Amino acid sequence: MNMTEGPTTAHTNLTAFVASVAANPLFMRFRGLPVGKELAVSDAMVLFSCFEEESFRKGEEIYGAGSTSDRTVYMILQGCVSVSDESGNFFSTLGAGDVFGLFSFLDERPHSVTAAAQEELTVLSLSRAYFDLITLEDPLLGNRLLHFMFRLLSHVSLKLESEYAALRDYTRNLNV
Image 1 (cartoon, rainbow, N blue to C red):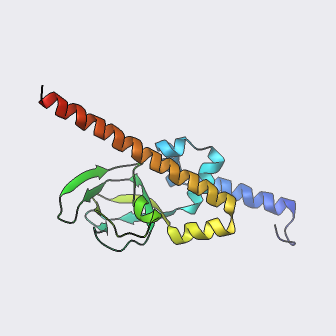
Image 2: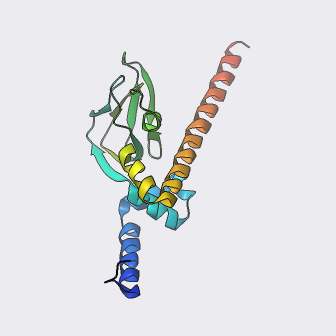
């Protein structure tokens, strides 16, 4: 709060922030995702406000395999993303609640896959540069974002573990 603001002005600004985020339809979608449901409403609002909304057209490439990463992580709110390797071999389809670009966000390696919108796509994105700025200016918020990233990694890890288990069971049944 600066010297010209009184407690009433600060409270009004906070109330306006809460109202604007709560009324945002994208925030409602974010809260409906598994990772959004795990957060307290106040944490979800603060974290949501750090992300930027981006839209991609059907067929639009978000990034290509082997391309230099701009170190941005994406969370799908609506639509699907096709993931393939440099040769165009299809890996998977990601949908609402899925995250991509997380590993390139965390390190500076080129993208290992191509991500392209299979249909009209709405994502929330967070650049590493903005994340770094947040952690410098507001370490507590930076810590919240870091915990959020760990939660996302945990979701990815659990998904991979269950896919691996299903594949292992499938191959065992083929040998029966």
